[in-house]
Structure formats: C-alpha cells, structure tokens
Figure 1: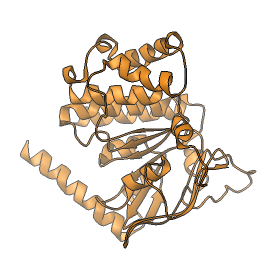
Figure 2: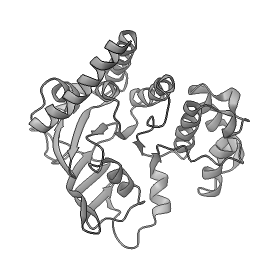
Figure 3: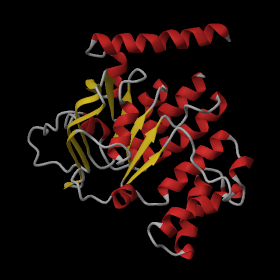
Length: 296
C-alpha cells in the first residue's frame, strides 16, 4: 500500500515537470467554480465553461446552479457522497441528460442551444462509464475502430496505427483480436478508454471507471489515467478513490446535495478543507482506510 502511494506521488510530480505548465501557478490561478481571473493576467482561455447549470428529475433537484471552468490540460476531480450529482453532471456535459437551465460552452461555443448536434460534440468530449459498454460480438480492435470509421468517416488504414499505439501504451496490444468475454474487468476498462481516446477528444470525462472492478484491477486502470494526466489531457473525473484524486487532480471539486461546497487544490482540500461538510466526508474515508489496515 505504501509503495503504491509513493509511485502515484512520483508520477504526479512528473506531470508538473513534463507537461510544460507550472502546476502550482495553475492551481493558484482561476477559481474553477467562479471563473475569476488571476491578478495581472489577461483574459484566460477556457476549453469548457459551465454556468449556473440546473438539472432536476421531476420535483427532485439534482444539480443546483453548478458553475465550473476548465482550462486546457486541467484535471478536475469531482468527489462527494453518493447521489450528490457528480455522475449526472458528466452526463449533462456529454448530452446524455437534458438540462433545465444554464449554459455550457466548449471552446467559446454555446452547446446548450436547441439546434446543437450532440453527435459532433461527443467527438470532442469523450466519456468512459462505470460499465465498459463494449460490443460483445466484436473484437477489441473492432470495438476501437468502430467509432472513428462509422462516426468520423476515417479510413481503417489511418486509424489502425493510432489504435495499436494506444493499445500498446496500455499493455493490451497482444489482446487486439480477443473478444470482451476473454478479458478481465480491468482490461475491458482499458479498452473502453482506448476506444474513447481514438476519437481524438479535446476533453475526457471519467465516471467512476473503477467502481465495478476488483481491488487488484483498480490500479491498472488508474495508472492509465495518471499517464494521460502527465501528457496534458484535459479531464473531468468522478471517483471515490481518494488517494488517486489527491495524486491526479489540479483542483478537487466537492459536491453535496447538488451544489459545489468547496473547490481547492488537492493538498488544501485533503489537509485543511474549508467546510465542515468536507471534513466530515473525508473522515469517513480515513476511518475506512484505518479499518482496512487493521483487518490485514
């Protein structure tokens, strides 16, 4: 366990050094939940802006005035209790759930208008779900090539080298001709990530991608996402893996009852959160970790 935490911290440190962006200055810049500009700087470029987003299911209010900004290469991690609206927010950003009010902008373009083509938007905002959603009758490589060929109209000979390159990077090149039933849960989730990346999105959304995995398989999936963070991919991640959130996040966004309670750099959030609600939430995870150690 201790060795695993050290490895995660080292990889996060590499992100700060290798992506060409000063991690500390990025965390001290704009508040992601307010859109405030850093002092002494011009207008900042945002790849995604969420303004006063509201979503309800009938009488039940799920998201109540959510506002967030993402800059290129930002990694924002959403944490909070079950049912607080984290996954619903991701689904709204990908057009899988209609919103009641508010605005979503992608590269300065409003994507919440009535005439928006979500098929095109989803090529720019990729998403990986808790379940793998692989077609069981297709091989790994066929699953990966399907979207770029059918949706984007790209030629197989153009996409195949890219797909193989991603498979090699996630350690699955030798499983390209296997069927989903022949893969472990962790392998299936890595294939789902590769499938999304092969569409060449500008932003990736990860919704509890380790929730259905055995503990031994969790790390192999998290390693892939950590590597993507070192490469500067813009990501919005929902997770209950607190050690992972601390390692990968530029900002931690804590949601509760459909509102953003707190948005802080990971060291601040995990060491000295501002709100009593966040402290209570983190105490539950500290208890769980102690319980796990005592039961070993």
